[in-house]
Image 1 (spheres, rainbow, N blue to C red):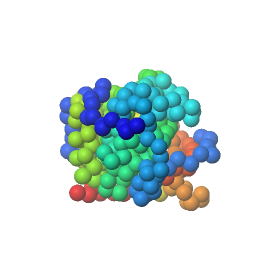
Image 2 (cartoon, rainbow, N blue to C red):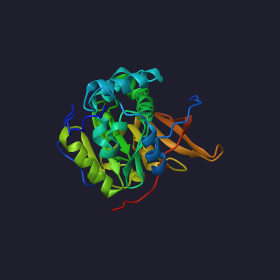
Image 3 (cartoon, helix red, strand yellow):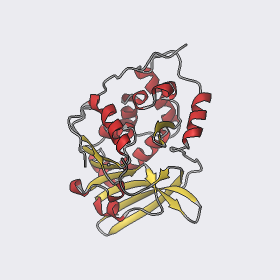
Image 4 (cartoon, rainbow, N blue to C red):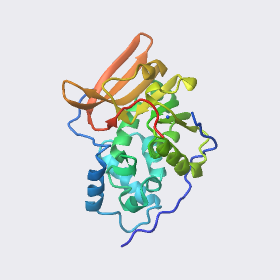
Length: 272
């Protein structure tokens, strides 16, 4: 059965302003940023969802059920991912793969991360001290807006989201895709993500969609006391990226390392 064409449906976020100024090791390997050519090839092999239109809550629920089976348990996070229509954030030619657990190209050499990776990183944020105390993510800094999908999910779990993107074309694309949602708590920033976004610091939660050899000092300085940072970082010893969690408390920073991941390299500056 051919899936119904995607509709630019609204979802329960409101967006009224944008800025123009972005443990224990697990054996699984998450690959949220596969090379574009591989993502295209995988999209061609995967079977599309069948029997329901892509704008149906049932299709999103199937994705959420798989996330739950994979170990994601935070109820509010699962509800947020069941709400945001991921198919609106992918290339129209690939919408039939929108709810499969795969990364997909979004242009400009970038991909939208796998739902399981988005959920894993956000659930780690929700396990931080401030998030457990307040029941939400508080003030969030997202490094790497991409197409805006993760920002939309974060917006349902946070008091405020500041999302920084260094590629102007992607920043503009995310603005267009998120505009129908009218999220009052979501602001997009075109800027150098390595610098964070000092004007709105400190942040209770910081999440990055790109990884470098180390964590930028600006991120650590902009993390609030009791806050948590989740980011990929290159591990020279292992020769690969790993997921790193940093908690800040009154006495300093505590760092934990989790499973291997594969994100695009973290870069400085802005590109038009």
